[in-house]
Image (tube, rainbow, N blue to C red; front, side, top):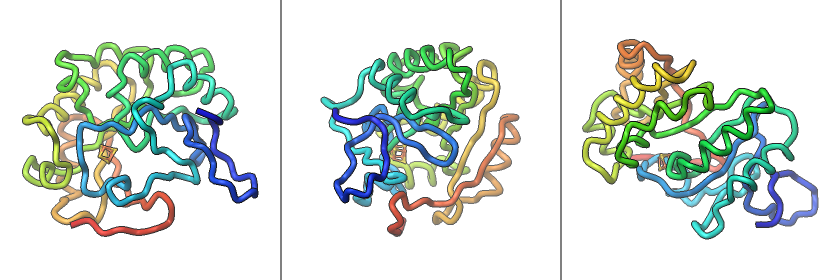
Length: 222
Ligand code: SF4
């Protein structure tokens, strides 16, 4: 894969698919496009594959190695945090996620994992203790205050996903300094106040976030 950091050079040429990209004050890492959910609100299901001018569409065969991800992160320069996030679920590549986190620890920069919270379900074991000392903040997509709404919006491939995600969040509280549940404002059927109460019951943080159109175009979610 040529090039690792997204930038505008004024040439008019499309930037390469990137392993790391800058967004706000963070450097975001693009591990994979594979996912355990098929969220109706996901930009990739609306044909949108860029974030902050960074092209994120990866074939499995092009997924960057741990070494390439670390190199891309470091080449992006100093930042306030590293974030595992992309148009796919970072925990799909669990060994690489841990290896990259361990390598980036040396920078002293905080590391956040944005996840759907299904890693333990998918990998068939409780993986949360493996995050200890490697991840500073886990942000988990709650997305809905009840299983029916979650399944309608997120279309999980595995039964029991909603309960598994909540259990993952509760476990993270024991091994990761900061845990946040998130839900998107304005989606049909999503009760943001009820989502916030679930986070409160779990004694973790909560953030309501806007539905972001990643390249400036908008799309509708039904
Ligand atoms: S979990 Fe994230 S990347 Fe995966 S389908 Fe949902 S919104 Fe898209």
